[in-house]
Length: 228
Image 1 (cartoon, rainbow, N blue to C red):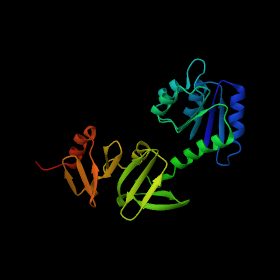
Image 2 (image 1 turned 90 degrees about the vertical axis):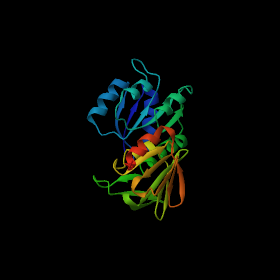
Image 3 (image 1 turned 60 degrees about the vertical axis):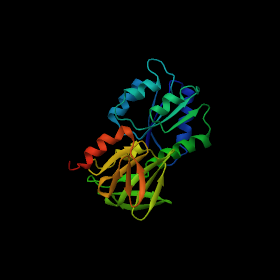
Image 4 (image 1 turned 45 degrees about the vertical axis):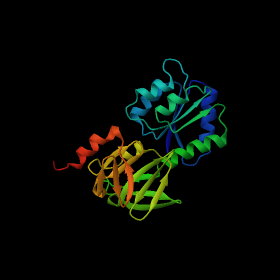
């Protein structure tokens, strides 16, 4: 996993680098002294993870994140706790308050690794490999019935199994074929082919009821293409 470290403090960068070198699957691409340097690296390198300080001259870490259209996973490292709300609104993976200790660092990096447990294997997205109990299982997209958010985790319901992963609906939604899946609630994505009955604001899939949120109802009904 390629990573960059962005921090204007030399000592802080060195500490993060020393911790990262103890994790076998982390490869430090660049240590950056400011966000502008980091943005330049992101344009030219394949980066999977950013360790990012918040308070820096010229541009804060928060402002840097807001400037990126497509950003990798982010772990914020800061001496300030008051930015937590802003950070999680930007969907960062974790927020570590300095000084950063190894156990806390490993926990944060573990969250990033877990969030990549869903992996597309073909450009046609006909199937995924999903990690369950350290084993990669091939799951055809057509077998997925619905996906449910449960706090910091998601549950993927298939015809025969359930997969619980540390991820977000937004991350999974970006990997699903648009013509097959639709978001129907802040906590639910369903596969249209498996929707059997819709009753007002409730979907039924295999006798399981799934709510339809008010913000998503109009788009969902359009996607059903009902005969008037």
